[in-house]
Length: 41
Image (tube, rainbow, N blue to C red; front, side, top):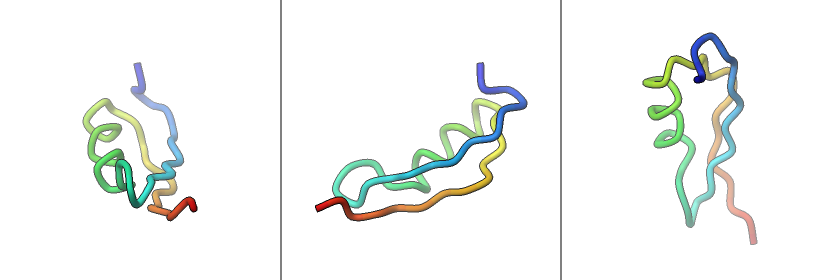
């Protein structure tokens, strides 16, 4: 489903952090072009 797609990841400090999402989308075949973990207060 994500094969060959480019992905920008916005993780949440109190939820799912960016690196965890990054590993999931990489295993699904996507290319991560931006990944970060932010704090939304």
